Image 1 (cartoon, one colour):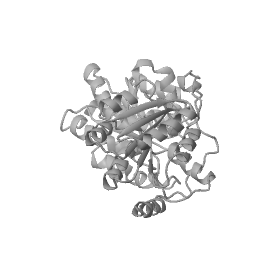
Image 2 (cartoon, helix red, strand yellow):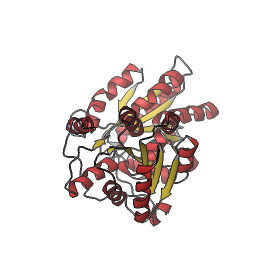
Image 3 (cartoon, helix red, strand yellow):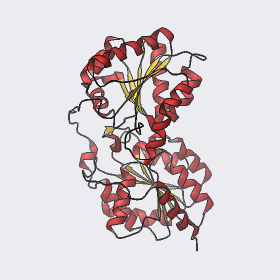
Image 4 (tube, helix red, strand yellow):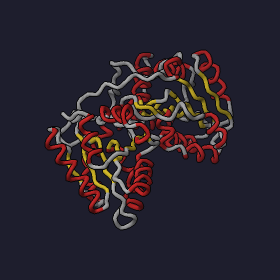
Length: 378
């Protein structure tokens, strides 16, 4: 395995001293190392395309080769700026893409990562981006970086390093105090309060990661079925638009989007579309703990912005922020009775149970049961 400090030192020795990206579980040790050591030369962006753009700006101002890190599920977000901005046929801007290879062929992974893993290399090759698979042996890894950074610099083009699970040695980050430490509820407790106070005909669209997993287990503990919720196991940041589509098609049904702060930030323009459309049965719940919990707990900007003020500015009729369980109960009642779109932001603690499970049903099974539930609109 590779020590994070060594990897960082190899890059900086070759002139790569600026880092931007969206956290990934396979890159978690290196992401936390950057958070501790890179200072203002490290930016956690809202989405992967934004990271490419920030890196392009840094190169324009310095002439240096920056690094963009991401999970391969975020490749789609990078395609536009890579092809219409950084490509050699446009502005020819060099950068190193450090990509966590979820769903790598020959490995076992979650359903939403399998197809992405199969096409990761194909996407890079279709974009004419030279790539290498980062070796886990340090000397070979150093040589690989030397070759790839030189290629990026001399040909002024993006290049990519694919990273397999277990490539980086674990890194213990320095504990940092957070306002989320003082919040009363865990995210799972908040989900239990929310679901206990919704109606039997209310539909839920839950965002990717821990929120969907905790919702699934909450329903199981209550002895309920899972047909009332759509678990958006992939496509981070798009749950609100899925919920909007359902709400528009079934205006007599309450449709609740159960969102996270990182997912909300990733495609925050969706709030403007919801607000402009004035979808009266759209109810938006943000579970905010200020971190990307599902991929290791790197910070987001969730505690530095006001989602409620943003929602109101986007045309939501009402928006509330709460921290206590009893306030959640009161606001869920108001949320259900209010003319939407409305937002409830619930402040929750960081982290999840160590034994948190995963859905026992496949995405196709989840879709079928949810579609059947939606078909019953009486």
